[in-house]
Image (cartoon, rainbow, N blue to C red; front, side):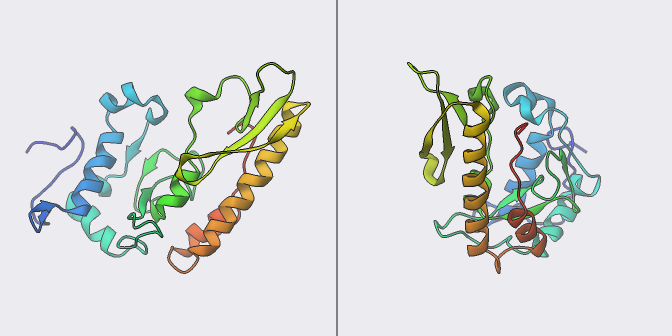
Length: 198
């Protein structure tokens, strides 16, 4: 039996195509397995060490699990399907499993993305303003736009402003989706805290 990405087993008792297109469940499963493969880690080092549970290695198990999850067939205000997420319930988690994964609105998932490679030496949400000795607080908001939050004398001041803005934004969007997500997701977003080490 050949393994998908050297990890997953498809015993062919669940559909991989629907209406002539790749089934949503199969596409999600393959993307998850890809992130657990060492070849993927070369281009995306933040995924190094990512793995999945034994149950999630089985396509039939993963397929059935998806059917039972709140948000699996939901779309956000922009018409985008909810994303499979592994680390909102446990910050920094690297295990895809039936206990750690949930479906969350694409808007919220995008809001939590971090691009460590572009950050440099300063805390998240902080940059040195060129031509000055002051620090700019900024936050990426929906649509990939950058919102400038002001200039400050210290990195700590700038980070504090970023932290407050980010946490309030996450909570505001979470409240819009309160009834559409698993209650654990809502609680995680409402209690979401930005750390200076993020």
